[in-house]
Length: 159
Image (cartoon, rainbow, N blue to C red; front, side, top):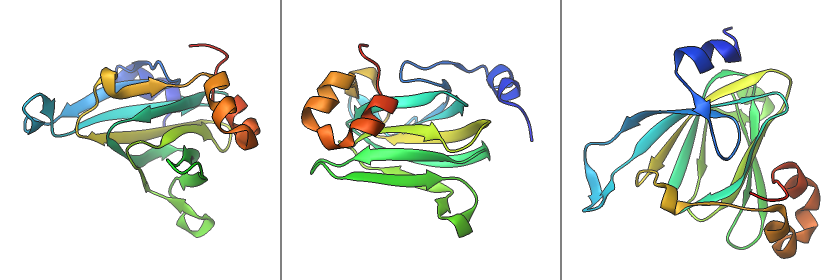
C-alpha cells in the first residue's frame, strides 16, 4: 500500500477548505445547464486526525473508495436525521465501495482507523464554490443539539 504522502505528491493534491487534501481530476465537457458543467470529480484524501468538516452542496455527491483505510461519512438529512455510512472495501463489515450523499444533506467524514483514506468524489451538476456551504459549530449546535458529539468533531469554532 502506498503512503498518504505518495498520493499527495504524485496527484499534486492541495489542502482543502473543508479539511484533508484534494485534486480536481476531471470536469465534464457537457453542460447540465447553460452555465454549469454536467459533473466534476476530485481525488480527496484524509489522514489520521483530519476530518472533512460539515458542509452542504446543492448537487449530489458520489464517493468512491480507492485506497487506504475506511472512513465514515456522517450525513444530516433535510428532516434532521443523522445517517452514517462506511466507505471502504470490507463489505462483510458493512463498508461500501461507493456512497451517495444526496444534494442538500449536511455532511462530513472522518477516518475509522489510523492511516489515510484516498477516495474519489463526483459531483453532479459540477462543483462550484458558490454551491458550497461550510458550517460553524454554533450554526449546527443551534439546529441539532442532540448530535453534539459528532458536530464538535466535524466542525471548527469559526471558519
